[in-house]
Image (tube, rainbow, N blue to C red; front, side, top):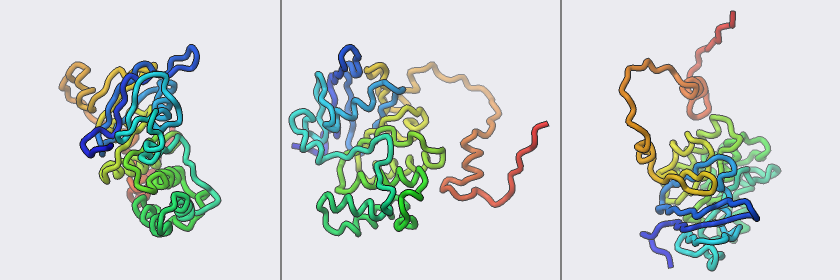
Length: 268
């Protein structure tokens, strides 16, 4: 049985090894409903392995995990009905249009009105203008947003995003970040894996750092910052960051920030 007040995900003592390689070593964490939880770690830390176990694609050697109130080992079918998984690369059909991709998934899920479902998701992810275009013509950010939209067909309460911005340019990353924030605002629980510090900082309500198969710290951004000594107050003239320059020139929506020319001085 599931309850609205129980955590969306509960993990306790999760272990996984491949012969002598210990990938997960007693991993524990809890994810609140309607929140964004980030598993932050470098390549090989065990993030994808944890997601595969939680999505029933892999069996743990030890420990327990419950997703939406269901045990991943003994109630795998119920878990799969409760989740959607988006891998590291967009799983979209490039020959079809964006609308056709969405409608196809809706039909495969035996849902009524697949066309209406597709149109609603296209509008939600700002893809309506590109609905009839072949996905082969989409930018990386558009493909990723379409991939996430496809994951939401059927309204799963929990979605796993495994390194969703890998290989994307800065503007596309910002587009995906906004889409993820809107998921949580609409009540979807998001478990996000990432190796990007700024991504976890921008998105997550709670952050767990996974290192060599263990959770070494778990808390809010403010709680994690308190692990370091207090910052000294000094006067520093702030220079624009590269992100400031990029957004000023391109604009947050991908359109030009202004219409003026921005000459770059030649090197002497």
